[in-house]
Image (cartoon, rainbow, N blue to C red; front, side, top):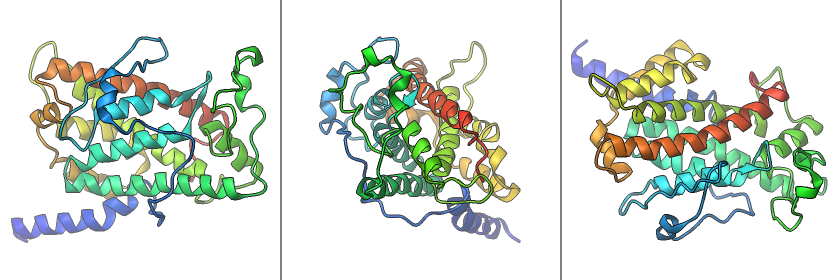
Length: 304
């Protein structure tokens, strides 16, 4: 078989398998549903003047990138809005963070864009489940969701206090367990199983961005393709079949060079890129750690 034939066969393999198998199964849901109660900033120019801060209270304002579909400042804002109380994660800003991460992946080319399509099916499913739960007469809230914070410190005027079944990671887990929607032995379309797949993908992206932000003491800057492949091998690859792993690694070969990422987040050099991505990965880390703890406490880290 010639070189062109091999390349064509490889692309066909990616089209047929990578997108559909990336997060263990394709889900056919529409993208027009959304969770209520979270209103992200519509005017991106306001973000550069926002006072968003991380858990330490230190402001981490990022500039708007003119002309870019993906906005690192908007991603950062959604991530900072996700933590709730001391151990929970609000699903509305969490899913909005994924909306922006999908734009990030789409910007990396058609091969990586196949992966983002599967992410969209996952976020869409959770949004659909939230709407169904809201319409259900049995909709109820876990009475212990807000107990992580002392009652004296809970602000009942805060919209996050009055919430629905899929308002947060912990409320979703509680409701789905109570209604026997989570199967620990067979694949289902539960929100918890779907969240686990997103959670694993978030670790991959977090590690990739951390590696991309590294400033080597000596030696060359490694290519984004090499860094993405390395991040994948230590995260998502552990949950994929041999065939999907090969297809994924082939997709990463087509990743843009480092200068593309400078333009994507509107920086001039590696030092500036390191600063921006450092803030983003710190915010991702808070969301990831809280989600990890919630899933682990309920024995959901290995849902089929």
